Length: 453
Image (tube, rainbow, N blue to C red; front, side, top):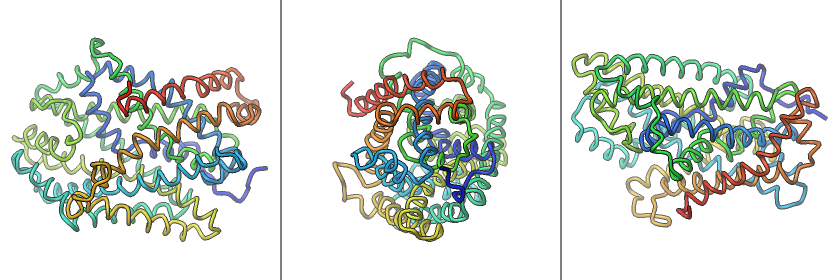
């Protein structure tokens, strides 16, 4: 029996934008381009697309099945379907994982806000060494990055606290088109630079000699992380879906939108990078050290244009980060709201308080707490590694096994086929992938992370 009092997304476009927004984030604007650069360009994109359809979409649908069939927060959703079996731990794992991610992710998002501010002030026009020194000095500052990280969580809080339709859906309908428009403006500016064609060719002309086991596993891991699999976000958002929502169709649309934005990010970055002779595989330092210099050098003869491009770029990063933090916050908010039987506003404040504590310590781990390490890593790096390398793959692996082998087939078939209104062949194909292909692929990602394969 459907819960008629439960909040719902108000439109199909709201579902797509909100759920795609959870996937679109710094991973698309930053991680995808540098992963593409490290793995030879277009060949990586082709392999990545194959991984999205083989692993990403079935994994998304599996989480959708759990969420919509239970119409509850992530922890209660798995409890309803698992009973008193150990499978119910998956939901709690997702809630904990999401709050850890929000805590450290807000720190990096706060860096984006700081760079937006100094871009507006015109302070990103120094030489390469000055930019590098600035980032090191800022990241280790005891209060500036901490304050920005807390501010970012507060921005997120005020969106989520307004509810599903008035907060998350409305914000997503504004943020996603704005993000897309900013991307297009930056792409046009980047592609007009001298020598930009080399960057376009790098992105779209495949070099299949680069295809090897490591590249395939990197593409598999990027597809997995880019789509927010294993965070319980997709399960939580699916609990707000209506009975008419086509789970498979929505997953395909979300995956395509997420991939298009990632490729567009590459089309924004590579032409500018090739124009000034910067390596396309600059790695994690790309957005805070390499790109400020790219903007300065590429538009050196047009400083006003360079100024505008830098401002727009860091505004883009901040918006992309916000679409992700909203979804991370909602997981915990829904949990505390429903499990503690408190108002949604109070549930949101509980999440905000807990994540602010995590953010403060993660930020300080780059400075005054740098000597405090866990397994040889600062707290920020440890939280990143713990979630990305262990908790997310583990959560997604368990969900695929749970949906594929434990939940009654009739329930899964009803959800995937929308109670018999869609072709049964889709269900059979989904069941094959979620039982065999997804678990093997995710296990390969886990083993690759630990350098076993």
